[in-house]
Length: 163
Image (cartoon, rainbow, N blue to C red; front, side, top):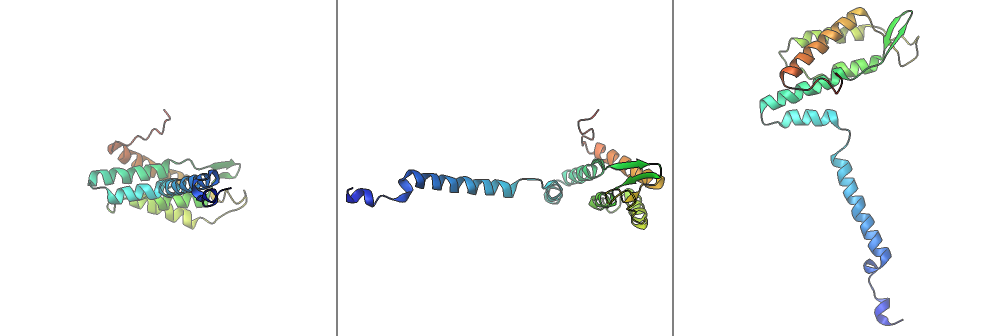
């Protein structure tokens, strides 16, 4: 071999080009993964906080609330009553972002108090840990209807593809 071939740069060889290409693809994939993904809750809250139009911020707030209360939560019916997942129920209630003067705040707070006051019961397994009472169902339905009405008033599609 001549002296010219021995001093050839690694980056112009096939392995060098493939290494460089792999580095670029990895960097692009890292940037995409860091800027997108399952960050719905954080994205909606950030959108609400940074919206320049207060009407848009309110719309995003009610969209967030509708998504929180409309997410299906499992229930188990037994001869002893209906059971649901206590942690999921509490997460839903705590995720709500209601305006300070909204009439739904006492409903949410009453429901939260009722759930927290109900002792956890693991008779049906760890997933079905909350006896779901008629009072809870009534308050949850009132909260869902109120949030749905406010979401509709802000032109939010509440059908979720189901008619």
